[in-house]
Length: 169
Image (cartoon, rainbow, N blue to C red; front, side, top):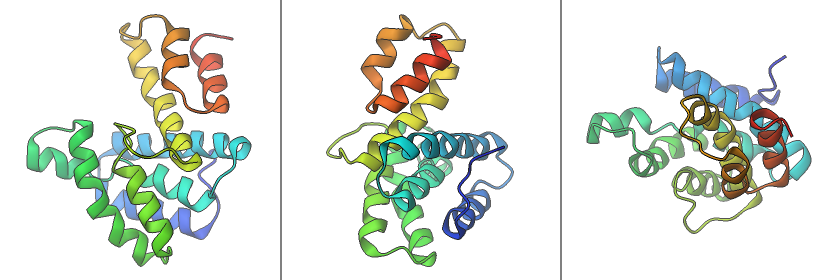
């Protein structure tokens, strides 16, 4: 059973994300996989569930605009283009200004980790890494898996899941 979160906000944001991505199943599936891991990590690590789930669903929301504007899906362009797309979606769904700002800061730093170190950011960072590492390790470019995991992950829960998935520890 998929753990997408059962609250109305998360369900509405999933629909919003799907509208933005259209028929781009790969991006939709990625966001939903990140949401599943974010929920697992959040259950142990805590933090603001609405911020965690909103950031997980919308973290890559600027990727298509980045490709359109810059011809690239590079993280730095996603960080630029994501917040202006996410902000009106979050406001329309009734998130208070503090949470809107927090989610947008997470999106604006989800590839670079500059200037933000909140529990919610760390959860999103690790959830995204859990999904992305599968591709990295599959193509053989991951190097020493344990060292890579220990270097990348910001929560103990995320690290433990990664070690279990990719090292068997």
